[in-house]
Length: 619
Image (cartoon, rainbow, N blue to C red; front, top):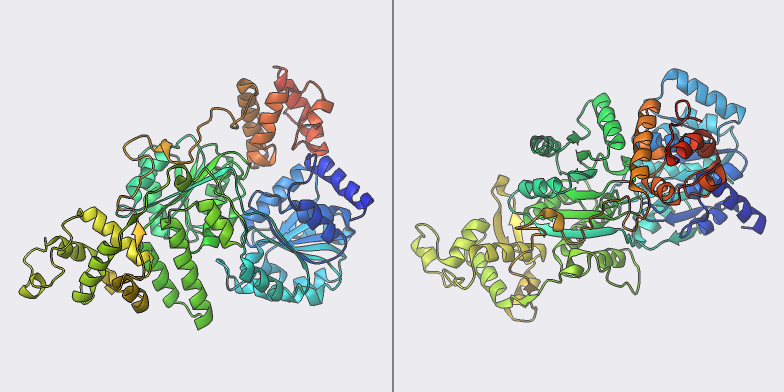
């Protein structure tokens, strides 16, 4: 990017979005697009991916076209752009005929800067034909991991976006995502016909995000209630694996006095929209959701994500926990998991119409996720290494960093479990296997009582044996046959089992699983950082901050818009700290662009001065 182009981009960033400088890899990505070349950018959630195509759309001649997979995500981005004074619109299944006609009129008049569409809508022949007559500045493919069959959220319609290279030759195409390993990135390049496009991959570190994981006790629902109750003053997302699970868990949370609501694809569309709107506007609501909620959440102040049921892969895990802390403030990702969850994930893959190669990759991804969750190393470092980062240091904030687990040599105990499972012939579940090891089987047959493994496990309590069975399932040394809802335990990988029998492979682990906050306030989960102000280092006036938030909430209700598209908490905190006395000082606050300064400046300055804002707050 030439000096003039770089200066122009910096000026748009300041004037429109109110930021003094680019972050991370934003500047080089923008430079590549400004030069008219395609690119692939993998930037972390909250890392400002959208700026990478929004600024080129404003600077290059023509209409910026953004392909996005979810209506909620499109609506959120369009609302934020309009607040910043950008001419943006979306065309989707919820757009009324009148709005659709008005949007096309703006497109054809050349007065629209950015248009958001779904892949299904864009690929309609009439849509492609009509847009092919319009000069385009850039085509952005958001959530580009959906292109890849190796990723965690493959969508066949995304694969058809390869046509864009033919229909719009010469228009730079930018594929962006927050989660893609090397294989997925290569598949994105091939699937979108990006050729030799440059690849920009930022660090996957999220310094504001503290991760923890613990094995479930039963369904884990009681633990979810404890964790959410300890965070009742903060907005959160809880992921459950089924529609019924979201409804049941939301009902229990409501009964415990938390403002919780369920969200899944089976709900009436209007109800889903109302619940999403309520969640986006709330300072403390809890959304209990299936992955249908996933990418549609652009709310920056989600303070925690709890997986009541684990995700499908490390990519999905990072995408979903990444919903927390997008504003850069301290946040948590807490995952509950168990061996039945992994068994269910593997069974689900068996039932899908996948090629042998794709199935093998997806099975490996499931096992990699559970190795991360059940492992004793730094969780953030493990994620970063998974995505290909080199020389990664421990984060110092996850549960394993703050309270390192003490690994014990469990090879002898593992040999006992494997031997017992072999002798019992895979005919029993984990409860009966543990009873057998303890010699406590009720009315054992003469055959069972005569086995050499009957009662050999008296050195450990039942809970420790159950935990070891889980670990051996995670390690692939045992397998769990679903048996129509009554799982049976048998031997896993034969070569690995023989290696343990012979002492060629050690089994290490911990016999007692930690429960963050167990026996105490669940807010003491490792990584949990309490704060009373809007940020860990907040030094501003808390009364001004509270007043600004109340004004913002009222303004959002009046406009029927999410509060954070008006100003983020971080911007309000900076205002409460700087206490600007005039428009010039307010304009130097990050997040206050020219349009917002003109629209909200008088009201904000009056509130900072302790006065009643003029008019209705619009200046």
